[in-house]
Length: 69
Image (cartoon, rainbow, N blue to C red):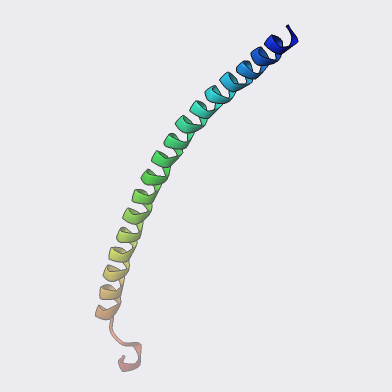
């Protein structure tokens, strides 16, 4: 009977491990989605920053040179 009890305990532990594994898989998938979304947002912000820098540089070029004034 002690062997059956040990087997039951092992079976319960295995079941808990499987449930935990599934939870971790779902959590990992959600985190991967968040990483992808943040990566896209970062890339978009970098692109916008680059465009803004280009516009600022163009505006600076249009300013008169202080030495010639």
